[in-house]
Length: 86
Image (cartoon, rainbow, N blue to C red; front, side):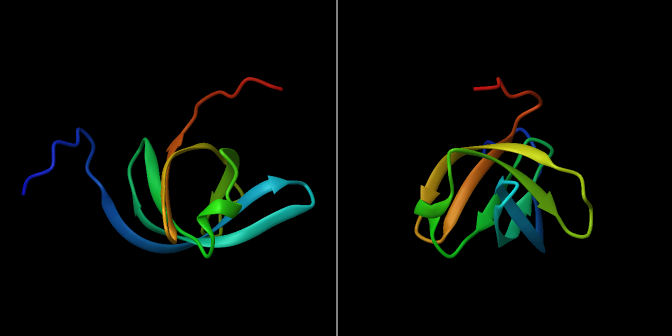
């Protein structure tokens, strides 16, 4: 079966951190990565909010993310360039 994705996915197993607020964050793993998003491996997909910031590896750079889909133990996210403040 061929994929019809416009961006190439790079497989990676990097450690990452889902940052929900200044006081709440938890670790996850990045299974694959594109310029537009990532597949995150998580303990509980229901604990991941719809929008959050993600840091990958030793970098302190934050990537605003929005959840696109959820499966048991997995969350697909897209990277947002801007996020409207609530």
